[in-house]
Amino acid sequence: MRILHTADWHLGKHLGQYERTGEHALFLQWLLNQINRQSIDVLIVAGDIFDTGNPSNTALKQYYDFLWQVKDTCCRDVVIVGGNHDSVSTLNAPRDLLRFFNVHVVGGVPENFSEQVIEIKDDWGTTQLVVCAVPFLRDKDIRLSVPGESANERRQRISQGIAEHYRNLVPYIMPYKERHIPVIATGHLFTAGAQASPDSEKDIHVGNLGQVAGDQFPTEFDYVALGHLHRPQLVNRMPHIRYPGSPVPLSFSENSDGKALLAVSFIDGKLSEVEEIPVPVLRRLIRVKGDWEKVKAKLSLIESRDGELPAWIEIQVETDDYIDDLDKQLIAMELVNLEIVFVKQIRMRQHQSMSETVEETLSLNDINPLTVFEKRCEQDYAETGYDDLLQTFREALELMEDRKSR
Image (cartoon, rainbow, N blue to C red; front, side, top):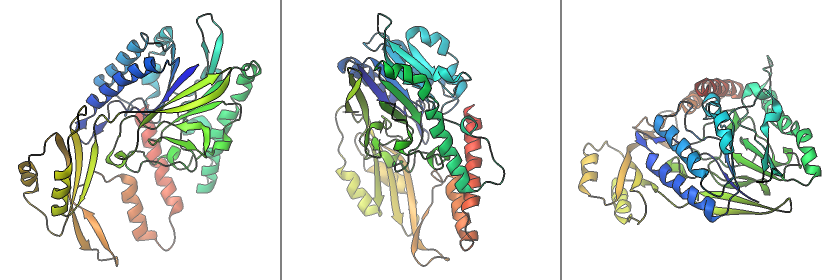
């Protein structure tokens, strides 16, 4: 049996004001071809199918068109779980209809706990695989708030709650394990020691507090298909616990990440191989930084590549004085097959309250609330410490994200 593990599509994603629809369309068509080429029986999408809880009609059409086309491939079943960016209600709305096409959707933790356990059967009705389809675990799914608890106590409570959720699945899967039927668990979470992408993964509790170590997943799981982190990676050097990463780079910080899918093979009920399938570069995201002369020199060396969409570039010009006609100078360069997306001027100066040179970004595009709050805490509470205050602010951000996704 062959299973294809992917995650973090983020359909409907924008980079600034620019849509990523073209890249996602090319990826989904490539994915359909790979399903047949790799003789895939089951496709698992481990969360963050959409970039927002209220996806556009274009993003929804891409999603449903893809699921409709999968039925014409060799793939028999599709398992989809919700991520922290997904709306539970949006994913779950068509699940009863999609089940007729062997598409199994678990947008959030169901009221009936056992509905997370999905049997994958062959054409004769024999169970060949079991998937414990665990979605992103929201705070309400794993713990109750405890008044007066410290930041460390909250951190431990969330981690323990996530681990306990997986342990509670073990009694449901033991009858299958006794019959030597392989079991896969999914998850959309952050694991201890894993590497996040700095610009595109939000620092909510799943990214900071809810860290689960690889050895906290029950050994009864033959493979753990994770999502949330955008870089392909193993967890604690355990080859059966993996992130495939996002198939499309979602920010300029991911411009050097190799993108991949994971093909998981079982023979006689045992995990035999996990193969990385590289995703082709559909559009390069290029970050160029330096003074204006260095930036011009670097831009002149960028060459177009056949088969790719025009590259997008983030240009960071370090300057002592604002360059009024920078946009006109860039247009005059007549760059071929390159689309300039973001242009920033970074003024280099001596900050009044610091002894070292710092950068002051003249564009506000990338400022996020957590960064601003951290800077203010550093300024006002450097001597007394502010860990608890920072933790409370993170939880406030998490609550806002949770409400947006409902």
